[in-house]
Structure formats: structure tokens, C-alpha cells
Length: 137
Image 1 (cartoon, rainbow, N blue to C red):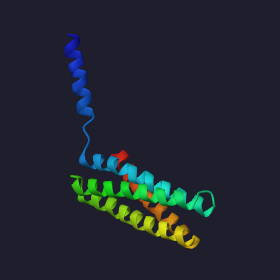
Image 2: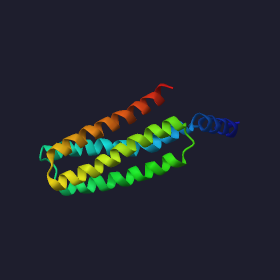
Image 3: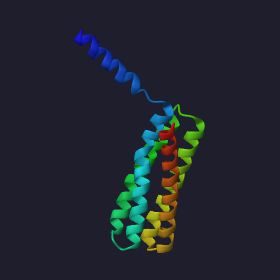
Image 4: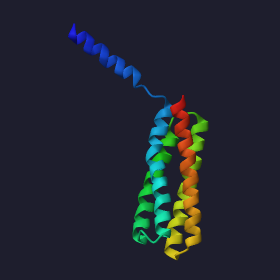
């Protein structure tokens, strides 16, 4: 009888943990969203002379690797096209901003870095909105 209950509990847990393709894609996009927020904070800290340029370059390189992985996840996902397009759009924005950020730091261009921080903030907010919509469903 105990085995039967244990088996039923396992099946119930497995049934409840099934995720839709949309949920899976949003989870796969979370590391990229975190990197976008990290780049925003890094840009703000660089503007405040709190982080060195080499830290910025390392952060951008790591973030771009996460963006590339998430772009592959988006391409392979069975999620709704609308969701895939929305995530892809924010990744493209973040990827472009990260390249501009790295170059601007090399040129000590504070105006461009400030603009990149705003672009990162907007992309992160857009991804958070998508995540919040998932939580309400």
C-alpha cells in the first residue's frame, strides 16, 4: 500500500511539473535577462568610476555568450511565435547595446555608455513584462 501511495505521489508531482513551451522558453531566457540587468548595473557603475574597463569587457563577453545561447534556445523553441519574436527582439537590442558599450568604454565615451545603460534597462523591463505575464496565466 505504501508503494502505491508513493507511486501516486510521484505521478502527481510529475503531472504538476509539466511546463508549456512558453514557460520553458521564458525560463531559458532568464540568464540572458539577468545578464542584461548586470550590464545595466555595470554601465552605471562604470559611469560612477566604480568598475574598471577590464571588468566591463569581461562582463560584455560573458553576457554575449549567454545571449548567443538564448538565441539558439529561441530558434529551437516550440513556444508561440509572438513570444519568440518578443524575446528575440530584446536579445538583439541587448546584443547591439553590449557591443556599443564595450566600444564606448574603450573610447571613454560616457554619453554612449549612459545611452547603453538606458537600452539595457528597457530590454530588461520588456523581458520582465513577459515573465510577469507568464506568472499571471
